[in-house]
Image 1 (spheres, rainbow, N blue to C red):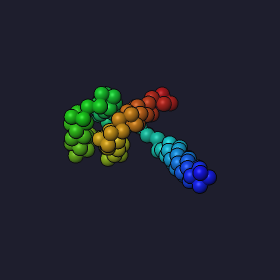
Image 2 (image 1 turned 180 degrees about the vertical axis):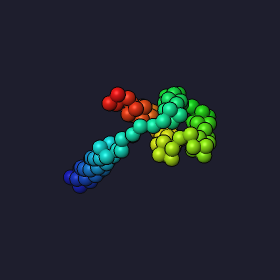
Image 3 (image 1 turned 45 degrees about the vertical axis):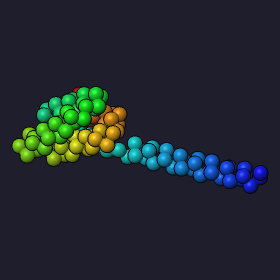
Image 4 (image 1 turned 30 degrees about the vertical axis):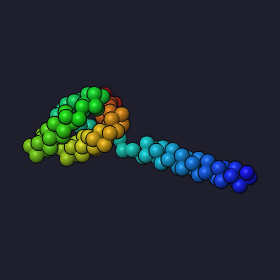
Length: 116
């Protein structure tokens, strides 16, 4: 009986340590997350569309906007940096992290109005 309780206690301790580490990693990721700088009007348009796509969890439009972003980079309508930021958000959504993608898109748009 005592051995069973000790094993169970050890398992809970391991779960607690794992949860604590996961929380620390998530907190560190949030603290060291790079902010966004100014983007151009075309990239802002894509961000607005991407925000809507993420809120609706629209996978078909996600693929379409990804293609539009690639074309805009090739046509020099948006910068490589803008493309990278938008594609990182698309990757989150594509992996099923819709809320995080929506949050990041919102942060990208909000960073455009700070200090104005």
